Image (tube, rainbow over all chains, first blue to last red; front, side, top):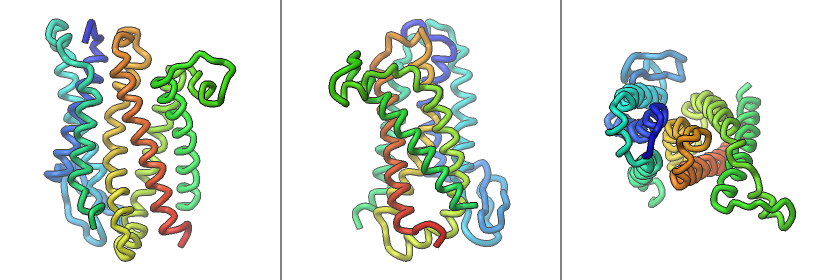
Length: 112
Length: 154
């Protein structure tokens, strides 16, 4: 990137880090909290539902957002000489790769 | 209440679809034609003017979807499983992840459209907009497919 602002560095790093952390959170079930829709209750981390299904989606997004936010904030504090070398395309290329990974992980539903 | 939420969700999705479609076409095929055919007029819009609307609609729509998703999880999803609608089921699972990935794109999407410092990165702006448009279209179509199987208030 040429002369990116601190927010520009943050935004590019966040887009890439969030996508990677999200797919890792889904694969490893790193949910910061769990929602139980049948009982309308929340539990920390991946708590088991007292009744009905457990929903981790909100927890996965929270995990990814917090992790990516911290990482992007740290990267945006680096000297401009370093951050200038970050390719702006990682903001779309990494999320695109993550989408392909999800399509691969879910391919079983489409091949039945 | 759920039916009302679902209808509002669909209407907001329609607005979002219109905004992002105009923007992505104007980004791929910029046109300054004020007259001419409908495609030229469709693309002759100032793309940057749509950014805040797209972001606001995306966040509000994802929030509505996230709320309705709780009911989907304990009712409609069972219908898809029991009816063995595996392709729709998988497409909806993918929609869930695409929408989540799309939320992470929004700060960069805003930056590359609105910041003067990002004007020399047209390809990044184009690709971010295209990716977001793909996510919105996927969500819109799959949401309708899943809803058509389950039906309203059944």
